[in-house]
Length: 229
Length: 297
Image (tube, rainbow over all chains, first blue to last red; front, side, top):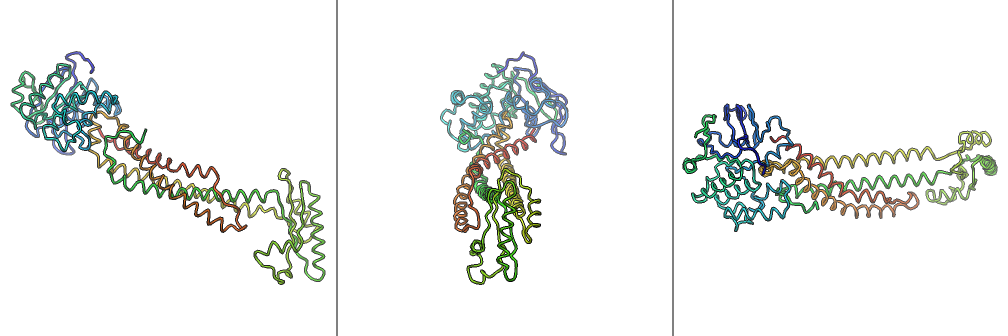
């Protein structure tokens, strides 16, 4: 993981607007920044645009207008071949997990390492360790269709954090797990945050946000983002 | 090892895996036939060329009427004498009527009627291939000295055969290029279908930071395996077919056609077809994946 000075913005959105096709703007004039080493919640009602906002940040979408700056690089002015290197610094927990059903749990979690060309011996050492940590030591060779919703979610989280990302974006990461597992996952995120990873957790669970109320919250409503202390 | 490299995409179960090898097999089979045909025709023409280079034929028209036979013999002797004086001539072999009849026997038989026909007489002339014989001058001198004599250097029919051979070779090249084009196009569409089927997997790989080449390599490896294995099947079908054609041709030859055989270069070209099919498929897949991924954000 790269060390960056505290306070430097990991991601910044300036006057960002987003619309799909000819539809209405999902996001309007979004302005916010995530300083390095920060931990934020992103809240908002279902359909408010939380997932779209995350997609802009993990470079799954381009804004219709405005500027997205990731790791001090203006995305609009970054060459396409340079984007994979930026994406590798971002860990993403997708709302629908997006696990590859034909691969085992181990192979799913190993993907970010393999696309970086990490040695297979390293992969075989680190992936089982992490899976054991999230309580899936027994499911190393199970395939996603045989896992429960909560287990899939933990695999998705393990895949997002295995590469020790500089920025972790989690879309409803505790939506399918019981309270005990949800707390454990949030503690994992806090551990990562202490190690320097900037975290943004999108959730509509008010209860979860209240439990971790020491972290600031960004609230998305009517296409606009407001910071709630 | 390319065939054993890991793949994150479940490409083995695709419909492409079932039809592409058979299509490539057919293409390689047709290419092998076209290549073998071009090489064999080229060999036959070269052999003809070699056989007739260094020879000339003088033809003397027979003299009709009483005593015509003796007069014809006299003209043959005179023509032979003219030819012997030409620099570069190694041997002059006038054929008597008996030898001429022997040449015609395979086509006209040996009946008495044939013996009475007024047959032109031939003089087989061997020339030194290194010496340039002024053929036009010799032909003119011959025509002046011996009425009814003409000189044939076989070039007219040979040049037609050589141009036929060249046409066949270009046709074979065109067939092979066309087959390569059809194979590439099929791989392009098969790859696009594969990418559409596995769009979700590709998107995940893309979003976790896979370079386009990481994805392209997996499609390319699979396309190479399918193209190469299909090529081997096509080669396995072509070898017995070509052997059967060769066997049938040897039975037909009977002195009319020169011996037909495939040169070493022909064997090498046909042997390389499966690898060529694999490489074409691999490149087509790689280019297609890169082109399609370039449209992703």
